[in-house]
Each structure stands twice: as C-alpha cells, then as structure tokens.
Length: 290
Image 1 (cartoon, rainbow, N blue to C red):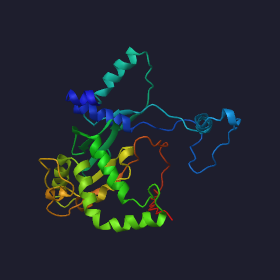
Image 2: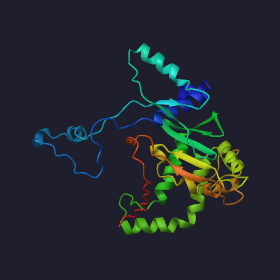
Image 3: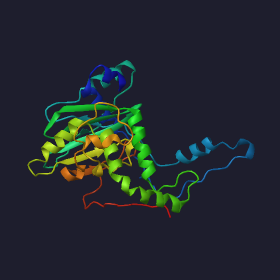
Image 4: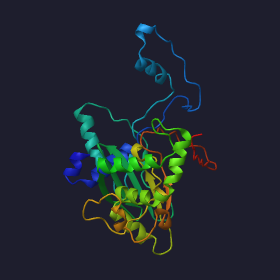
C-alpha cells in the first residue's frame, strides 16, 4: 500500500483494497455455527498447560475453510489491472492460481451509489467510486493518528465499562456525553470522510434523488455510526486545537441528510455462500451493559 501510494498508483491501491475486502469466503464443509458449544479439548497437566496450544485445539476443530479471493471485475468496460501482477507473482513463486468465478464489484442499485471501502495496512486506506463513473477511483490514506483519535472518541462515548469502572457509571458517562454528540460527529467526519466524497454526495443529492452510500469499514472502524457523521463545509488549513473543529462547519448537516447508508461486513469477517431467495432479516442490537 505504501509503495503504490508513493508511486502515485491510485487504481492499483484501490484494486488491492477491493481484493483485501473480498477475502474470507466459506467453501466446503458444514457452516460455521457462531452460537454453538465450544469444542472440548483435553487439558494437559499443570506443568505442560499452554494457553496457545489450547486455543489451537479449539480453533482447529471449527468447520471453517477459507477460499482464495474471487476473481473480481472492476467495471463493465475494463478489467482489473492487478490481475496482470497476480499472474506475474504466481509465475515467479510457482504458485498455482485457482480458477474462481468472476464477481462484479459494483451493485445494481437503480440509483447513483457510492462505494466506500476501508482497509487497515499500517495506516488505513480508503477508496471510493461511484456507479456513475466506475472507472474513476479516488484513494486516500488516513493517518494512523487520525484513526486512533476517532477510536478514542468512540470509546469515550460507549457505555462499555472501562477498566475499574462499574456498569452504572459507564452507562451514566455515555448518557452524560449526549451533549458532546455533535462534536463527536464532527471529529469523525473530518477524520474519516474525504473532501471530494463530501462534495460529490452533496452534488448527487441536489436533484432530490437521494444517492446510496455503501460503506465497508475496516475492523478498526467497525463501530463508527456512518450515517450520523457531520459533513464538513471546509477543511482546516492547519492543525486544529482541541475544540476547534467547529470552524469547519456552517450547520449540522449529517450524512443521512443527503444519502441513504448501507453497511457491508468489515474486512476479516468470513462470509457464507449466497443465501437462498427470500426476505432478508435485519437485526438491531443496541446492547447496553446491565
């Protein structure tokens, strides 16, 4: 990622992110049951007890098989530039490339759809493109410090107890932070939404037809409430002092004010084969400790 960014190869960076986000398909074997009983394993004597060995005994018994990422198609008019480099690598290291079905990387949503994907590789790399012009890609590295700041603010606003904190105190802290929700939304918006994406979202919503924003976050950003992020009106020309993010906003416009939002599973969560036809099930799980 770093090398391709320095070489100014945004298309290859985007395709590498796309390929990273496609890893983790189930193949043969029974489905992975996430609510079943943990398999039993034999406990060694006290002198030989190894937690990592015990963990290996559990995970090796899970019916999980990982497949290579599928062959991806970039757009109806062009293929993946990365395929040529994958062929070179396979030849160089004598690694056979398994034939996998071709998969489109864009949806048929019937309206303009923005595809936004994040991948962690030292820094966090995001790419976005629109179904209005699939061949034009926008790539942005998000500095580790900005991601860490976003995670700190999310952690402070979460009712999950911190070390040494009781459950009632944690819930009270989260509820008392309600007044800081706007500041949280603004900081997350400034750190995680690039200026060119914000401008295109507003432009797409001008005619009254709401676009769709499809977000696939990285594991570091899985807890971000994407629809509630504030849309900046300008970017700072200097490092902001704490509490100075308000200078970048004229109002309180949020992502959901201009677009609908759908979330894809973060990178690293295995996906099953396509489900049979039928209505989807939507789960809303706002768990609060205690």
